Image 1: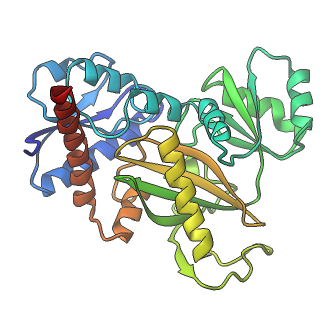
Image 2: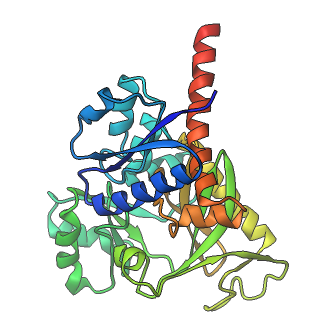
Length: 333
């Protein structure tokens, strides 16, 4: 059996609506190129009444942010008995919440940057006292946003209040994370296997929203494996775009473990930092990463010999097969 009718859900009501529309349109075209029967649904509320008027075998979720990655749309689709791509309700909720994700990593013994959680209801003097435990610079992150929206590096205590006010526009809870100097990598996961590693070299101060979507100078390098460990633990720059095999394997294993401990399914993209002493730190797991042909998961898949249409079709097949397995298990029980 194969899915016949595929609904691509895109748009949504989050701050990432425009990015989602780009992802959804790219996915729809790729699936049509792969020979699928596809129709698009521009999600403008949390009812999605069009789901009740169409025959749908699989919903491809290309929604980013709230009611996309947080388990909301997954719960709606399950209530209607519609199979969908990617992770389930609980894993989506967990991965969307950066604080909950960190706690899970720590509980499972996976290394992640040290952090403090604060709320907008705390006094500034209390927040400043907490930051002194780390020392500057620090990273400010809203706990429930994607696409690096609201994230900033605070290097000067004089700018702390301004940066906090900007970050609190995207939620009442923030993470203050220890700043780690080093290299940033992302590892795509497909069908419980790690894809080739990509190194991110932003032209800007760090990989924020503008570096992702506005600044064309950001470099995305398919990491090559080298048997030499020269300069891996030395001063930057050190072998940009290269890793010795033992570090390459370690990064892929860490990413796959992160995907698994959160309970993710089908696919994800895991972001990792490596410091100047070659220690890896988990940042986050993206359960619905970008899905344009220029996005990082498709780039990693392409490096593994998987075209964008084939990637999208494989993700649909995984969702459909998982549904058939669940049906078989319920019949047997």
